[in-house]
Image (cartoon, rainbow, N blue to C red; front, side):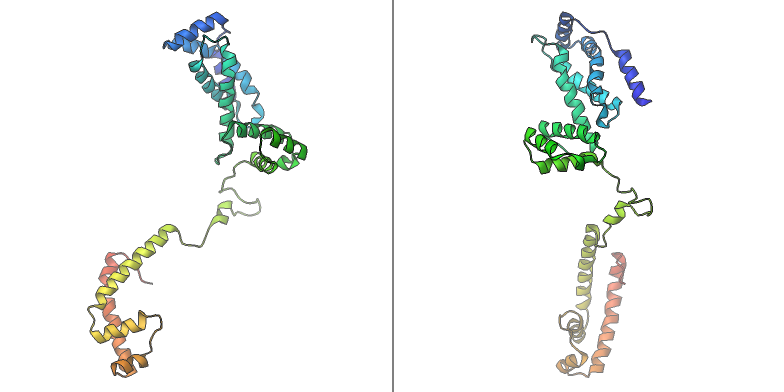
Length: 282
C-alpha cells in the first residue's frame, strides 16, 4: 500500500515532457535561483525516475524507496545541469538517478559496509541480480560466471565468491533464535564469562583503595604486629608462626595471638574507609 501511494503521488506531480528549448530556458532560470523553474524541471522528469527505478525492482528494496532515492539523484542533476551543452536533461540525469538508487541499494543491504568504489558497487548489483535467480544462492554461481565477473571488475574469484555470499545472506538480528527447537539466541552464543572492561576498571580502583587503607592502618600497629602481618600476608613465601617466633624470640602460640589481635585492629581501622568507598569484602 505504501509503494502504491508513493507511485500515485509521483504520477500526480509529474508534468508533461518538456521541449528542448523550453527545458533549456527553465534550466537557465533555475541557475539564477528561480525555484519554480527548478520544480518544473523536476516534475517533468518524475516519470523518467519511475522508469529507471523499475529496472531495480528485483533488488529487494521497496519500489517507494527506489523512487525516492531516484528523485534525490534527479534533484542533484537538475542543480548541476548546464543548458549550454548539447544534451537533454534526461540524458544527463540518468547517471545521477542510477547512482543514487544503486548507492541506496548497497547501503540498505547491510549495516556492515559492503562496497566503496563504483566498480565494487557495480559488482554487488551484478551479483545481486544473478543470485536472485538462483535458488541455491551464491554457491550455485558457476566458475565461468565467477571468472567473468572477476575479470570484468578486476578482482579475484575469491573476492567475488565472498561478496556473493554476503549478497545472498542478509544481516541477521542477534536476538533471533538459532532454531525453532531452542529458545537460545545468537546473542547468547556471544556471552563471555570474562570480566568486562568496566568491571576490570572497578576492580583496579578497589584494589588501589584497599591498598591505601591497609597501608595507613598497618602504620598504626605496633612494630611486632606489623612485622607479623607483613610476613604472613605480604610476602610470596608465607612464614609460619614458628619461624616468625624464632625471629622475634616468641612462642608460635604468642605469634598467633598477636596476629589475631592485629587482624582485628586492621578490620576496625579499615572498616569506615570501606563503607565510605562502598567496597564489600567477601
